[in-house]
Length: 544
Image (tube, rainbow, N blue to C red):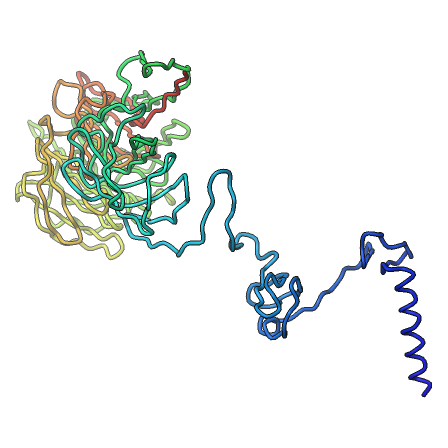
């Protein structure tokens, strides 16, 4: 009886207080609640705990009020509120883990919005991106022929909208005016910037092209990819003529297309071999300082400091050898040994010696199956492939540094003595005279490719940015040609590839995305090292 009377009294007091003071304040200092609030909680050392529950428990709440809030403790943790009605709850997450927030409604972003679309699919060559209305960014692979590119997007495009940007991969080169048809919406002409007409081969097979719709045409924003270089994207003089109605702003990027002389060795060298490992270049063997005898030279060049260092000499002195890096080591393979008995005698060698830069030591490894000189080599999947010819005929050998074993593979279609080999995209391209052959280690097969424009031998080659550069050769002409494996196309003098002074019997290697030519023979024996920064795209900014 006393308990019932006490509760009745408490309810009466609260009812009276609520009518006199419609706000409730909770604080440690006894402050008056803010008049705009029904409940004002103030504290400097404590917080509020709202009901905490699992997702299952949250979903079990019967007829949750619109705006009801809980803290979910599992799955995607966070504060959730009922955005829907009591009879049809719609729980929204106020916040989730940083970086994983999912937009659940349209996001108004200037003049366009990102819609909630199904996840796109992906393939090796293309990604179909979700549509972004108004200004779209879409990736696809074009098909079609006869200058008419066809693109089918999923989700499908429903209209051409000014400002829309499309990226596609071309599957053929244009031979004049070209058009694009997206999702059968009709052919739209493709133009250069400022709606200039396309020249032949402006778009190349295998090239990734960005275009923007101006309301009438698709204008090309840019091209990129392992396709070579469009023949109209090179400045050939210091004079730049902007489009009609525009003036040159004075802002343009430098074209990387030049040779730079670096620190020379202490003496001349030719018929040597070079290889790159961990950002350094290693030079082994060759005829040193005017001698016709083979040397056991071993020098390290550091491009970052432009400095040469002498290292432990190679056990077997040789010239006309090849060198490659694999499995963290340098391998000096084959070549010839020089002796003198009334005349110089050149004996082909099968020697295979391994150099470990970490310990500055040499180890003799399993020799080649046959003695060869004037050979070349390239590496695919940490195996060394040696190509060349000798007294016992032409050959292709595969060396596995891990097992220290050799395998005889199918030989090239043409003689490859004094040629050059370059690995690209898990295939090897072997060049000599006018021959250009592609070797596929996976299938042990050879394919004849586009012939070298200018016959040469005893040159060097290296790949940068999808182009294989052939440097020098036994000719009095300055040569620097580029070959695109993607398009099976040669670029000779256009774009204007910077040319090195005539030389042959030199070493050529790629290091840090640049090409180095070391030593060799020109009009005289050479000790210099030349660094080449291959041509890249440029941008010119004009103003009206």
